[in-house]
Image (cartoon, rainbow, N blue to C red; front, side, top):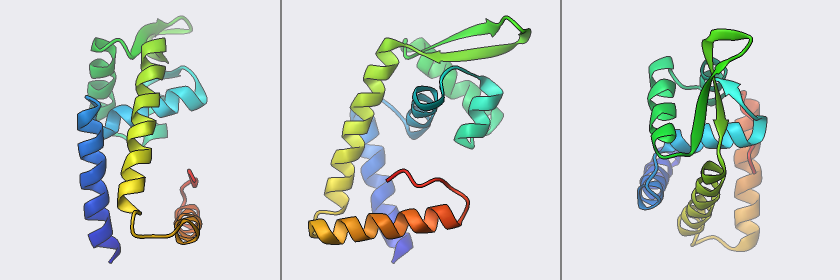
Length: 135
């Protein structure tokens, strides 16, 4: 059942992000920058659990859209520091709304109480397996 639900969830998320002109990697990068502030590409990759080539591609795409700025780290010119822009913050807000809509669609058959229980239980599972619950 978890696998079947995950299939529907991934489809809904992909459709929501596509409608907003984004991909999942974009959301992960923008959310990490918003939460933790500017970071090197390597640090961002670790935070987002993304491969080095994927983080470079995602940052490049976001930079081309004006959602992030990449600059040489003054302490180490070989390293790039990535910063979210105002447009990036606005895009992140659009993506947050898209995810809220996706969650509402996925959980539509559940009552408010059932939703709260499911979210709490999923958070418990994520935390147990080494993640941080995102509520």
